[in-house]
Image (cartoon, rainbow, N blue to C red):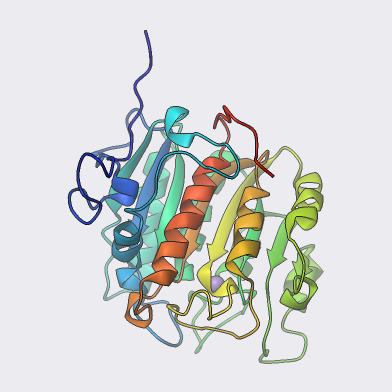
Length: 321
Ligand SMILES: [Mn+2]
């Protein structure tokens, strides 16, 4: 019997500006049963240090995902003919309490561990990656990490707090959630609180690729090296939209000049094909600063590209380039 997969609703069946407002116009899923991949929104912004607004991120990424069509014309991927993909809606965070929200997120993702699905998360500020990593580590053990971001997010404290959007990966290391020699940070730049701000992660074993090492270059050769380094073990991909230059992604809370281009972002995500990705997030889209919607649209496309490189995706046609 032929398997039926969930498909994005076609623009020839219902206009793209109408109909479903789920991620990529997929069916809404009541629960994780039967899903290989779930889109999940986390409308969190109480962990941000500068401009707020990422609480609206999931809704706007979904809204700007309506143009996504099923087949990847560049790489040949056919994710919707390969995997059962659905949208589980949003995690009901407590917007009055960051710490309670972190616990709610961890519990939510821990429950999903009972199912063989890969979560793709729509953020939300970067605090949310910590509880997701906590939950996934219960299933996979310490994971490799590809962390694309203008910042290292390895502060010890922010305003005296241990949990905030800029402390995520230091906490993750301290809690043993990461396989530190399989962690790569890409795109860091701008100014530090101290001159050795980027060093802490490197001292733990991280590879740090500051944005200047990416300027004027294709990311494709770099990603080949990263795939070699990360090997066959589990990998989490955490993609902060502020890794991009504000010219490409203005709608974010802590923008930094001189960032990655949209083309480099596509090369990075496409370069993850072949890794054992166990989860991905796309964080820090802040719609109040995204007047044209271009940041959310880019976020939606990067999430689509993540979908295309998950284990089990078929490529009925090879890449055009
Ligand atoms: Mn970040």
